[in-house]
Image (cartoon, rainbow, N blue to C red):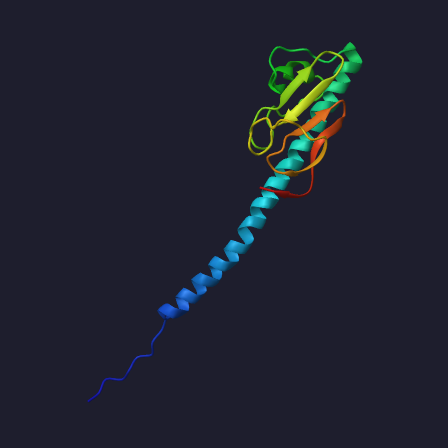
Length: 152
C-alpha cells in the first residue's frame, strides 16, 4: 500500500533568489536618494545654526559696540559671551565639526567646513553645488551657501 503524498509547503530556491534580487535593486535605487536627503538636511541645519549664532553676535555687538575678539577660532570660545543672548547655541555643525569664528571687532565670519570637514580654498562667492563646500556666514548674510541639487 502506498502512503499518501503530503502537500509541499515553502518556496523554491529560484523564488527566493528572485525576491532577494528585487529587494537588492530597490535598495540600490533608494540608498543614494536617502544619503542625498541626509546630507541636504545636514546643510539646512548648519545654515540655521549659523543664522542663530549670527543673530546672537549681532545682539552682542549692539550692546558692546564690537564683536567678541578671541584667540581661539572656534565658536565654542564665544559661548560665554553669547549665552545671555541665546542659550541654545550649537558649537558644532551637523557633521560634528567645530564652527570656525573670526572677528576683528568690527566684523565677523562664521564658517562650517561642510561634509569633508576641511577648509576648501579658494572660496567661491555665491551658491555652491557640492556637499563638501564650506558654508560661510558673515555680517548677517551668507557669502557661500548650498543651493539646488548637490553632488558628492
